[in-house]
Length: 176
Image (cartoon, rainbow, N blue to C red; front, top):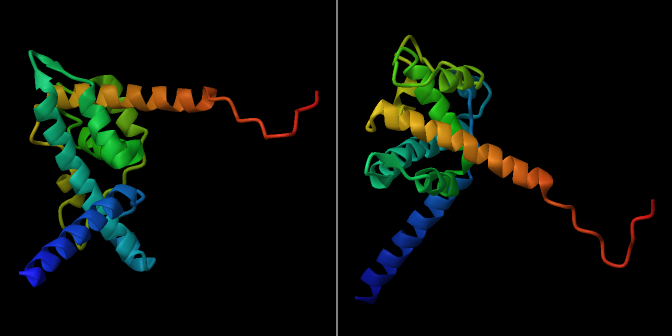
């Protein structure tokens, strides 16, 4: 019985470590071919896995936080806390670019996505692999609201960080 418990505990620890690795993995924006050519396939695969998990978290958060014809802003915070704004906005940019012809996505969000560096990810003539990062289990109108709120939340966070005073060193006063 102790052996079984130890095996379960070890597996649980492995799952927690993997989840932490996905959360902290930097966004790798380049296509698979570039990663292979530059010996960065591990970075590409880890980033891709994290981006797919982020996409799924966005879909789940929209489902959990949509009620009474409104999307609670907690949806964005939930995903940003888990994956950070860089990955969240990257996945959203891929989504908006993929839905460029959809009238339920605002022109403002389409212009923003067009400014984001997202590379086409085709391998050996295959379809664009970025399609696996597209938020497609939520209504496009709700996705648009999520994108708008994520952009606002990131801008607020950046502004707060910019306005945060730098701490004074102990024992040393600044002289004019």
